Length: 88
Image (tube, rainbow, N blue to C red):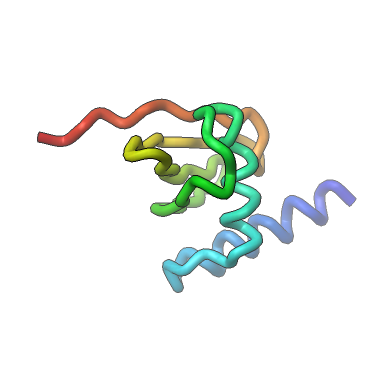
């Protein structure tokens, strides 16, 4: 069952990469995953730049004027987010 869910998520992410428009349920999942990491409620956050790889997914989360680089290994486990440096 777990393997099937992982394969479904991978297929979903791979299929969405070409369109560059992420499905709403994926955005909601990413918002919930990083909310506690950046101290921002999910509904006050925007998600962009979703990139998927064979063993890692990364995205940008923005909240209250700050931007964070977030990543997760093994299909959304071990989520971490760091504040992006401001570009000058």
